[in-house]
Image 1 (cartoon, protein in one colour):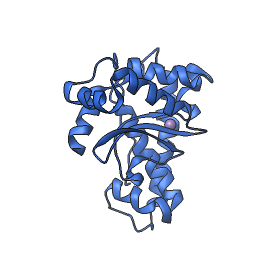
Image 2 (cartoon, protein in one colour):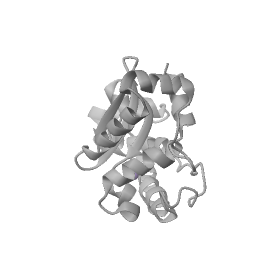
Image 3 (spheres, helix red, strand yellow):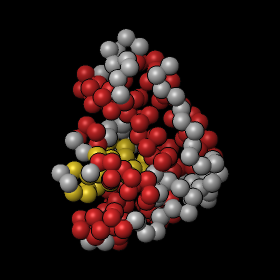
Length: 198
Ligand code: MN3
């Protein structure tokens, strides 16, 4: 078996009430698990066996959409769980904050741009903070797409598929995105991605 469903980096009820245990039961336990199962089935005989996940994602994007969708969704969800922490949000570490100040004019500017990116992603997809051409940018992607196929380094992501927020926020995607920024973001993880990308 190539891929395995990762354990959540916190208890399933640790982010409640911002993100409930019931949401994790379905989102991690059913949706993410299904992407892992499908990725493993589609990997067999694909020619991508044994390759690093980033290479599978970049290599299959055009040539093998079925494999791409499931492997990229496994990558995106694993990344998403790590972007959140109990009592998250608030201030970013100093090095990251200075980049946010330079490229968004401060944390309020980042918050507005990130929420707007997620709100305006029409249909299913993701909103990301990425490093591209040595600048921080907001990137929105449809379905399973991610920054790896757009020559960018992912630093932070929020899932804006309806399954990510419908249990806790019903149709209120903006409220979900605001709560994610204000209360869930694990800025230490985002900072570590910036250092690794730099
Ligand atoms: Mn999802």
